[in-house]
Length: 198
Image 1 (cartoon, helix red, strand yellow):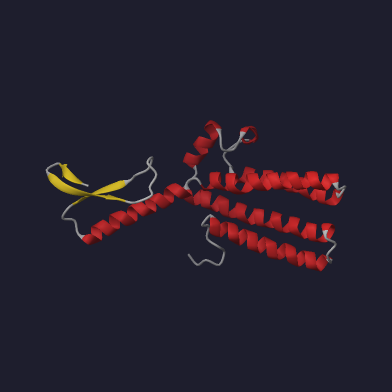
Image 2 (spheres, rainbow, N blue to C red; image 1 turned 120 degrees about the vertical axis):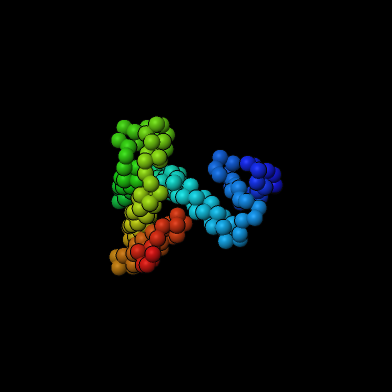
């Protein structure tokens, strides 16, 4: 797309796949050198990355915490019908632990606001504006570790109490699941791993 503005001809560079509500283009002079064009495109891509990071806490809550809470509740109901009381207690403790993880993921909201919904209301909108992308990335990284610990402990408890495995085998299962789930979540949400030198 070409036209005129302020007496200068320009070329319109559009990056594919950008949401309509965000910046879609950069207007560059037609005679602009290739280096400046690449710098402008790189800046737009970085801005696009910052837009994605700005909603990481929301994505983590919707994609991880809520499904995991439903799974624990359904598992607890199944253990209740099977009279597996120890595993029922594990599920109940897991639900409470998830609540703590969710509260730490939204540190600027009060208990009342969290009960009304951490992703809804004026408090959620204010929090999304006040928390920087770096702060949200740090919160999500910590939540990934905590969810990995929770899933690992639940897996170890099921292996020991439910399947009757030896305690040391259940411990190995718990450790492996902790590390795998935590690392997988951090990769999925693009959170730097502890061994990352950046």
